[in-house]
Image (cartoon, rainbow, N blue to C red; front, side):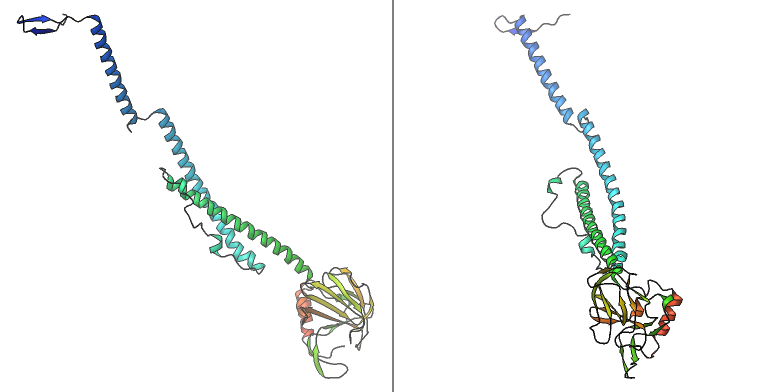
Length: 325
């Protein structure tokens, strides 16, 4: 049944039907469509801004953020493992390596110092996961610094190891005469009876009794700095500078097998036993000096003597007998 609208005409005191032409109908329809579209658009925007409904892009971004968070957590776990390994290496560095090479340990203040001053992480703040990102970044920077410090420490230890190798090759460490060629260890280091004055005086080396012509060996690597017979009492003698303050002296020789300035290695034949200078019998007088001070040679035969041979030599060296020079 068609619906019509009426209005009350006061002049005729009767109801009259409202006639609506097509233009009015079109205008009303257009207004209705426009209002409906605006209402629908407003509702759509309201729904899109609501946390209840997520767009595909938001869903993708949420998954991406969750993935980043998972990666940061995995990175934190890996850094903790690296920190554990680095802590172990730092302990060995301080407690073993630096003790061996007599170097001062690196303090924790230097190894694990943080970063002070202005806020270095201001650009990472203000996000949902800022705390996680800032802590991870800070931990990574501190860990990087510790690795740099440890790397430099290992470089230093490597240099000390090389220096130690050179030092070990320089320290006198063998007997100057082979045991098979020895008649006896005639006199040790310390107070002994002088064979000429028969009084006690400081004997600054060791006397090895051996036949004339017995080979004498350089006790370590070095450079020959003196080959002559001009020093009082020593007769024909050789002096070798081994570096690091070590100098060895070989006296009362019969012949030389080296010249001044020559480089020698441990075990090289440098001369032969004799009876020149202030000497009462063929023997080698052997001295070790460190920074100009005389040392007891008995402490430097660890390179070629076993325990039994060393104990026998030590017992003979400790006897207060008469020296041969």
